[in-house]
Length: 335
Image 1 (cartoon, rainbow, N blue to C red):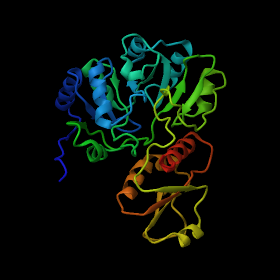
Image 2: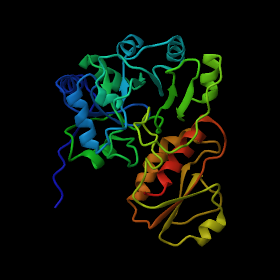
Image 3: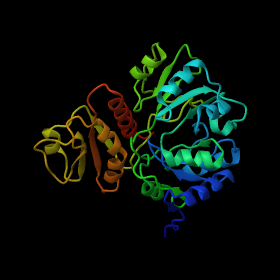
Image 4: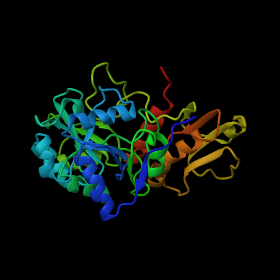
């Protein structure tokens, strides 16, 4: 018999925000919405509280956390901001951009996996920013799901995965973007590098910085601690086995077994069937596809399909790269 769900979902009323901010200030955990995905938040300067994040998620200690702040001033209290960091912060914060920077001494080693750098971002979601403001703390917050599973984009997703391990979930609606933030390494401002693709593109970052940004490469995380989260070869993964192809066609539909699901990026013309699914109804709908990606993977994972066949998003824009990165990691073989 499964343990009873203990988590309660709270609407973002002033009274509830005040309650949840007190929980955070006292060292508790609160799952909360951002514009990317839902995060499991704790006081980033409280090592004991941050260890509780790792326990709740089953997250390995060598996978660092992102610290969320409410202002550039607060970011400067936990990280050493260089001129390049200030430039991109002015251009893209609040928003889906995480910066890797040298850390300040106040940040506990558990947050950074013992590394001298810290991941920092200013989220755009008003409710999350209000939690930061009311708690008076920067908040460490990885995705609010069991480690390695599909990221949550609704409060119900969080309760499905962590409802027996946490008590408080703030409901901020469906995550607007639906994939995690772009991560930019600015430890050396003369050698900026893209570590994870997201809604903000490398080209946009280059225009602001006035210099080349090293291109992102999907690579296996080394045995030592990763400099940023989301670097595992297998991540964001459903339990159902997945196979990726460049482009799904009618032949794939005809050859698939009746218990195999097919996931198109855009709604296929003239192809129907109980096992045919898609991410977008729009002709050029990558925003919608990213928004729906994790929700659809969860839906298919709960559909008792024996296999999921998915296709890559076409194009070279930021969201196509982000979608394809998440799909590639979701479909990577278990080791």
